[in-house]
Image 1 (cartoon, rainbow, N blue to C red):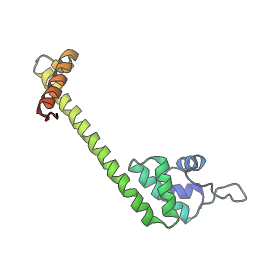
Image 2 (image 1 turned 90 degrees about the vertical axis):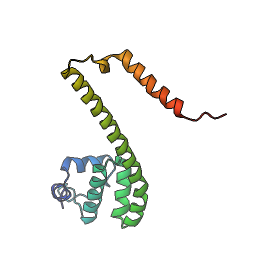
Image 3 (image 1 turned 30 degrees about the horizontal axis):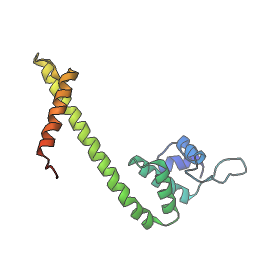
Image 4 (image 1 turned 30 degrees about the vertical axis):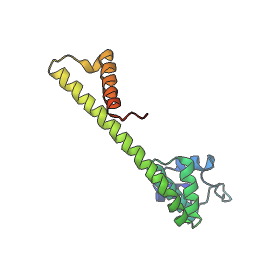
Amino acid sequence: MRVSELARRSGIASSAIRFYESAGVLPPAPRQANGYREYGEQDLCRVRVLASLRALGIELEESARLADLCSKGQCDEMQEQLLPRIATRRAELAAARAEIEHVDEELARLALAIQSDQPQTTLCLEEQEERHERRFADARMRLPVLP
């Protein structure tokens, strides 16, 4: 199959497939007499796995390595190696969600202050620093002190 068909069947752009090949993420495809790349079912499997892992936010090099394992019939090994990365990625997403919630709460507080004509203490850097120091001072007071 040509690159356009591989792109259509895998759901990614032809340019992405060419990029992956030029970056060494995909092995170079054999060429037909007319110079067109010729891909097989194994390449389709590799590209689908690669695209799926990339969509989950796994780095390109690691996605390529894992996709290569699966395309060689070592999907069980690929899945075993993927499990710790899934845990790491989920922890990264949890941290990102917590940050988004924090920013959303701050935005809601600021919007409320602006709408109610209250002093906008959230925009005052000095007061932000004081609140930050108080919050961490409170946390330090609750921690046990070791001898």
